[in-house]
Image 1 (tube, rainbow, N blue to C red):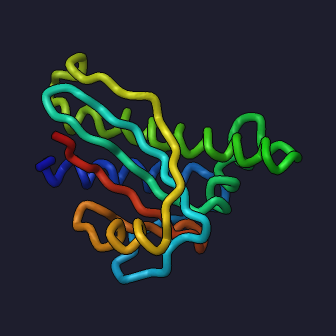
Image 2 (image 1 turned 45 degrees about the vertical axis):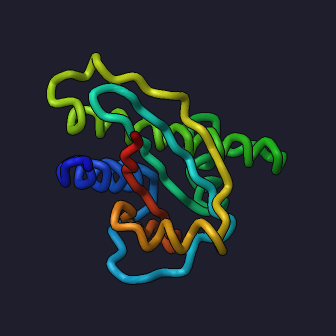
Length: 155
């Protein structure tokens, strides 16, 4: 099990990243919430003295918000906009990994290897109830959008 400081660092890093988006205010959610609409998960895995995955779940609408405020902005074509939004969610997962590494590595940063960030869809009926109920998952709000973030230990 990862130390509580690692989960706290993940929470802090996500809040800092969200607050860098112009006009976005964010915070932790402490009560049950409805799932995001059309949720997507961006994740990045790591191997070293410990093995795990950082995962962030957000609605398609939120990923488009990320893309709108990214370098290059949001393309006009919807398919290109969705592709750019996917890249932005994967980049967010990668930045969370970079922020979290010092809390996992205990000075042994060079011993860790990271995968490429990946995307997947999240099934609201099957995946969301388990994700939201997990003690490893923390929920956030950002301008009306619900996000979930978790640090998962892998064997």
